[in-house]
Amino acid sequence: MKTLFCFTVCLCTFTHAYCWGFFGHAQINHYAVYLLPTDMIVLFKPAQTFLEEHAADPDKRRYAVPEEGPRHYIDIDHYGAYPFPLLPHEWEKAVATYTEDSLKAHGIVPWHVQVMLARLTRSFRDLNYAEIMKNSAELGHYIADAHVPLHASSNHNGQLTQQQGIHGFWESRIPELLAASDFDFVVGKAVYLDDPGSFIWDRVLESAHATDSVLSFEKALNDSFPAASKYAFEERNGKTVKQYSSAYTLAYNQKLQGMVERRMRQSIFAVASFWYTAWVDAGQPDLRKLKEKNFSADEMSTFDWLNQLWQKGTGMLGRGEE
Image (cartoon, rainbow, N blue to C red; front, top):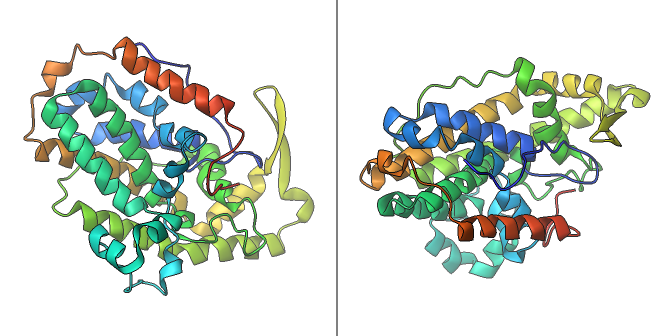
């Protein structure tokens, strides 16, 4: 398959942070393919590279489209105390309670996941190859974001507790250091989701519940760890970058007792199950009809346009995460 640009793993630095990192999102979409039934793998396996490369497209859009940012998170603590009974899970009821502008000001990821599910279902029903691939890659991104604890907190980068940088530390540095050698991504098979809305809300509530551990464990580690060993400088793509040291990262992962690995595994299962649910709800169309399909020149130019906007961007529009 012709691809738009060469995939480069972008590692966590203190000047650029992405949800799960480009690496993490690519890994989640990659492994989700293996959870699909044979009737879907026939289309998704040959497109695996595309699903990896374009897993981060929603993050790139954050540098060009102001409306994109709120789709990646929800500051759910804005709505009271866990389990946030004052916040309706149905979009229309939530709008009636808080107004659409207010909801978007604090993030809408659980609702946007459901919007993307509807789009993917329609793409399957229409047997539209380009839209199936695009919507699958991007749906995977938003689902994975919903599994990140700091995406369910207004203290999204430790800025309220003097822990600036913890966002990228948890979701980028740990998987980049440990995923290949220590993480197990064999997670079974995709399942049909009878209630996708409740499913994604449960994942968001799990993320919110874990936020305190993410922050308090790092705070305790910081207070006990030798300050001179907390950071390290490494060569990445010809540049020297400052990041959390391997020793500090390993110590934090140990305190978390495998939380990052668990959330990645849960993300992989959730992404595959949403893809599968969309296909079933579309009537289980025969995807073998699309095996020889590819992207048109116009469709490729759209990806090129997004990439150019991202490369020219000077920073995230709306709320950043650095």
